[in-house]
Image (cartoon, rainbow, N blue to C red; front, side, top):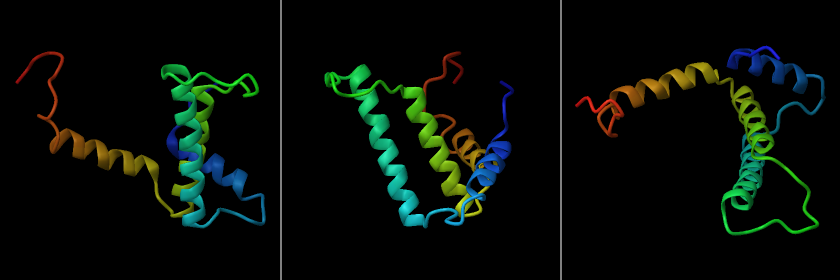
Length: 111
């Protein structure tokens, strides 16, 4: 499977959502969906790394699948608000590389 840029993923999701009359959900509904998906991811993390085993009646879901669901909803949310996620990523990386550049201990131990 060929790797996709974030821009390509945003276009792909927009094409998928665009085939339905309902379109994107409202921002509040999108936030609720994101919260729901985060809860499902949290549950999987807790089952895999935590102390809470799954019930026998619970189906097998993977952390990767739940992260994929989160990414899909995040892309829907960004698309609905006309946010370019590549630009958002670049802005946050600039912030981390300037404001927080000396916050953590570097592996190469350069001061």
